[in-house]
Length: 409
Image 1 (cartoon, rainbow, N blue to C red):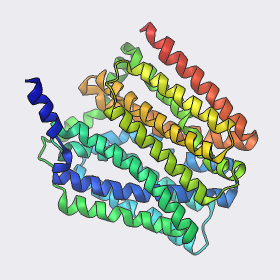
Image 2 (cartoon, rainbow, N blue to C red):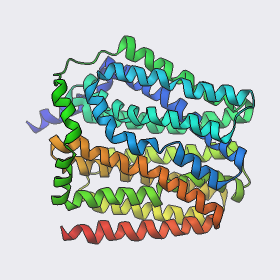
Image 3 (cartoon, rainbow, N blue to C red):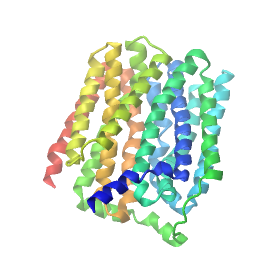
Image 4 (spheres, rainbow, N blue to C red):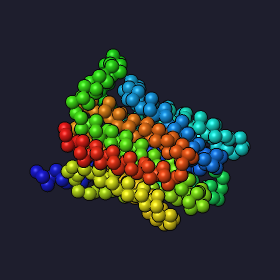
């Protein structure tokens, strides 16, 4: 019996499903374009302002819609046909990068134009990100779902390497506005796949009244969290990891320019190394031994990130900077997926969507706040002091939460 079950799981390859294969290809192409734009856009903001403060403002303003829309996105996804909703978000996602490319090409771009267009894209992303996750369950049978999500994560982080690499090549040998046109074009194949090639499985539809009642059920989550303190602690640890760890990434242009006297090419390469480390981290979780104590694993990921940031902050050699940046990416994919799985495993299915929406908010929404603070502080005090201050808060608070506080419950 055990043998037949293991053979079954070796054969549950979601790539055999044409629906998912088209989805994965479209997903990869669109995210490659998104990472290409993200790298070029960040560098363009820095070129226009030469300021960590404005980098922080840009990161905050361009992503703060996630704070307000992420939780509501779950309701929107349940109220409307998901294939049509995904098609609409992909279609409208074409226009912000297209306009950004035109404004940049004709040299009328300003900091506030970039920020406004990024804010529009962020509104779409706040719906698109959870929608893609849920849409997978409509095109992949349940036994294939875990591996399908793993493949999606792998494609995301592979795009995270390829996108910045393409941005570096385009900026070095072409024009930066071409990165924005490339992103606009990258949504078209995915849109075509969704419209004409991907056919979701028939699923049971809830009546509208039942769906609308979701809006009034967050009291259940509050009651659940009052009882399950460990869930609250893990969510807080995600907030701390994001606020004082992941948010440091907004300072990479300053590190490249002020410490290593580099430009867009070096910044793109550094961003690619971050993605490479994230892929290695994902592989270590997927193919490593089963994690017995997930909260302790979260502590180890926090420790790993803290050590990596110390190295990034104290050793000024370029090759060590590349090495530590890849380790930072490694720590990210050893923390966020494990925290996500811990929350899902310890939450009833009836509450899981709403709890995971809080998890999404705790890193997507908080990241914009942390990036703003990091950029603001980097302009007011030295870059090294900001990173040092963040390291102390990251390690001390998460050590308390994950090693000591969680044992009391």
